[in-house]
Length: 399
View 1 (cartoon, rainbow, N blue to C red):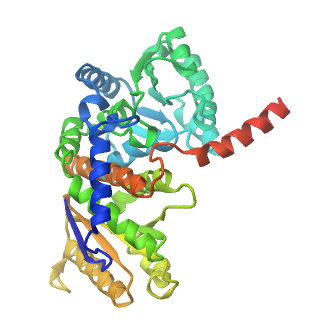
View 2 (cartoon, one colour; view 1 turned 90 degrees about the vertical axis):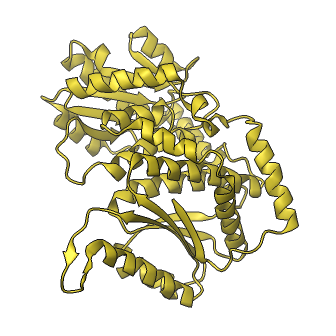
């Protein structure tokens, strides 16, 4: 993984004050205060739980056609990012993996229940508290379906939740369901390297050991994450308050959604933070690209590039399609630099579990550092709770 700040002129020398601040942040991270167990893979997932995940994934792969993951936010975005990034576009490999519980579309749930009929199904319900509205409603309907259609439903439903307490854990114990733990000191958006992300990824057939090794390799790469976090802070201070998470490989679409969550939910507090938007190219070059080139100067780009992919020769241009993709990416960065629109380019060698593990860890660390630089709590989400409280008040009235 390589970082290129050449198209972002705001990559300024670090001031003495900033160096002191970053030294304080690094020390704070190394002390592993509250909600920092994601820093080390050993506290993300124990060896015992890792073995359990591998055994469960083999059993699921051999006994089901459809694996349904129920969760919202960090409970599903991390695993979906890895699976979509690595699995072929048009895969017939079983089990098929679908995600639910991340919205309140009645039509989606009706169609999903219909689609499940006649298929061998396994379900993974993911919620630390067990009380989040959207996945809870979906799970109630799906679990009812499983009980009505499978005699061995208890072997087909896995609950990923708090290891010590909570309504969902209590129900799982009562129903004799398999339980996987979410470490208490890891929040949802930092949970991709815990059982939250690892079970669905393992069920997809992706090597979770390589994913974890990639994350481990970034453990001491504080300087790269620090530089990215600091450049973003400089850009925000200069009026660049919107960050386009840009990619030129469609397989990275779900990864961009995960990046959007971890940056926005970690740093968007107290009137501070940058708004991350998802920017698929070359599609958006024919729409949003116009605004980026000539609109208000409030945007900068973080571009995720994949160096090696499957390829097709283009004889008429005497290059390959992948080379053309890179050519367009670089020319767009040059065009943006000409109008002072900064671009940060992050290059992955290829889409492998190891490389994606590195990238995910890099963004986790960058998001936390950026939150500390803004002097906000990187691990809470009071704004998310606001709508939940209002919804619950209305539901209590109607109940």
